[in-house]
Length: 179
Length: 207
Image (tube, rainbow over all chains, first blue to last red; front, top):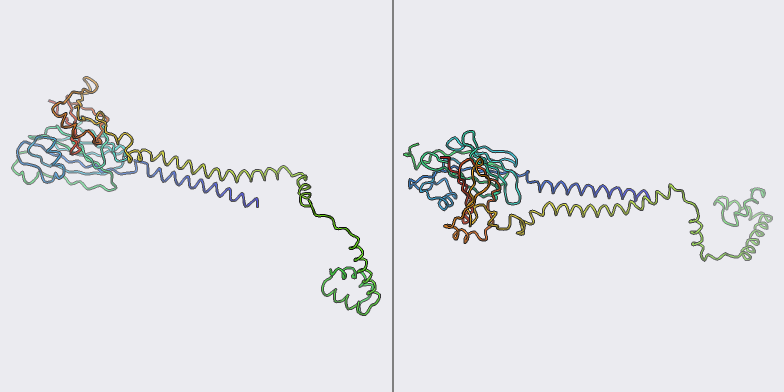
């Protein structure tokens, strides 16, 4: 009778420890924000005053561009998307010899923390840290390119896959534009 | 035929029916033909009856309690006492530990998910609209000086768009919250458009 009680006690202790360890692992895996991959989408847009309208490739970006700026032409130069885990940096080549580095820092709820550094040559032109809604976007504008202004759309969303790079060459509706 | 010398020692057991079956048969077969042994067993039976008539059966009241008292007075070895105490304690600790572990797991789970719960139910920093936290909120345009000149942030009013932006963004949840902004150019402008939920950082080239 005494030995049976001892076995029950030990079994109870082992079971409690196993349940606690299982709960800790499951919550840790779920709550750890660095386990999610972030997909970053960068669109380079050339804004001009040539009255040619919006490039078809801009898609949903046309509306905020039209509301925020007063240019008459918006041409999509490149559309690149990459995915990475939090804490790892992504590098994007922009028109005009610029480089954009984006590093997802963390994911807190529905907000993604990003660090963005814009380089012109070897010198950083801009460095910013911000929290953005999942599937949100931020526009970076102002650098001059050709006869207009460069507007960079930075979008981020949590995902497990990332699309391949597909740079967009000069849009076909504007074959006569001088470079 | 069995000798009386061999049967006589068995007569008492035969009377009490305490012999093996084959021995009972052998004694009974002998008694059928031996008057001496039959007389002896009759005497045993008479003595037994007289003794049973004289003997007084003791009362059983309090017998169990008395036996238990006597047992309790028996000294128990220290090793046995310690073993019994430890078994009792282990049973209680196992139950308590299981309850404590379950409570700790529940508390840890709640603490880990509290931020997400707060956000889901509209509590916490990301659920409230705070125009001061929303960069270039409806009232102000935040202008950042280059790092090698005046440090800090210079804010100036933007009255032209104030009414329009306030009307649209009064109750909006901030889509973007900028925590750090450094630039080499003289002036950097930041504003947001609440209808499309887009934030713009304007970084003109140095002239």
